[in-house]
Length: 86
Image (cartoon, rainbow, N blue to C red; front, top):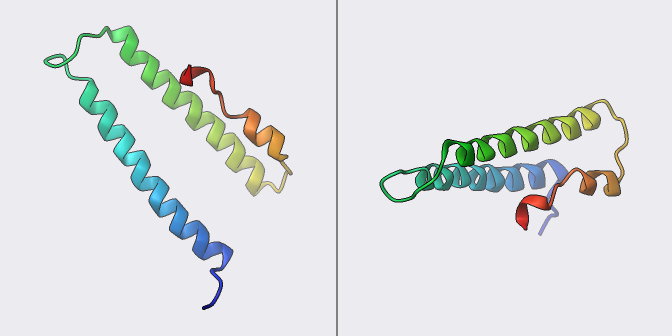
């Protein structure tokens, strides 16, 4: 059995992660339903702020990769805010 190339691994993993991302947005839209839940506009805005923040971080990591500016594993991990998980 031949070993997958790095490109093939990326394609396989990115396909699965894109699917998970779409599923997460669908799940988010499901809870933003006033007939089932009680929430404020400010609570909804928190979701959008988090999405925007993560998008900016992801773009920053991608930019550094394409510019061949080395990013250490520690820096990459520090990009991930865990505060929202608490």
